[in-house]
Amino acid sequence: MKKLFLLAVITIMISSCTKKDIDPQTGEPYPKADKLCALTFDDGPSADAELTPQVLDTLEKHNVPATFFLVGQNFDDSTKDIVKRMVSLGHEIGNHSWTYDGMQNMSEKQVKKYINDTTAIIEEYAGVTPKFFRAPNLSASNTMYEVIDLPFASGVLGFDWPGGGGDTAELVVEKVMSGMKDGAIILLHDVQPKPHPTPEAIDVIIPKLKREGYEFVTLSELFERKGVTPDSSSEMMYVYVE
Image (cartoon, rainbow, N blue to C red):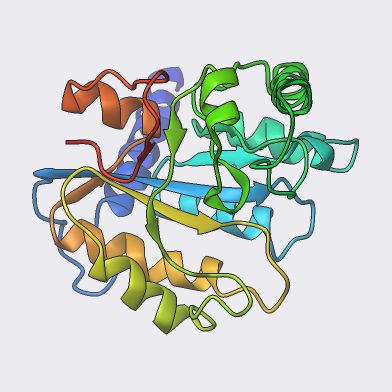
């Protein structure tokens, strides 16, 4: 009986894994991946079911990892389980400063505090140390480059914020696809005012890119597999890893 039970469990596990590799549109396996990309999300975490949790649900549905750039002030008892879920699903955590405020006019002391406080709370809640930084509003200064000892990441923009131009899922998909190439970092948001188009958009983007031969990896894995060492000393924000 034990052998039969184990066999049944293994069969279910294999079946489950196989289904995740099937194109829902065609019912056929996706083509073999020959390109890499990294999905990244800004401005979380949020416990709102239509924001970070819905993005996590969609990523889990498609069995792909992502990198979440989290804002320090958003960590509290309500988001603790959300952060734990991110880590348990294999997602990577990045530093997105303490608040949403631009840092380009901050003093060295302010920059250090915002970065260090955010890293500390990520370590406390997630049990990991962030390896990358994304500047709020993608605005940087010489002070930030000098003080922040993390590589800066930008990305192919989906413009999925109010007034950004990606006001619908269809527009977000269009804008992301127009900037895609091997080694792309995709920049989206898991937290924005509702109605937020991103959860619906990534439900289209992921299978669409898989059909084009893309494999989704975390930001760290993207650099590793491309054989590129991320440089924290250069004044640049990575959009592609080549």
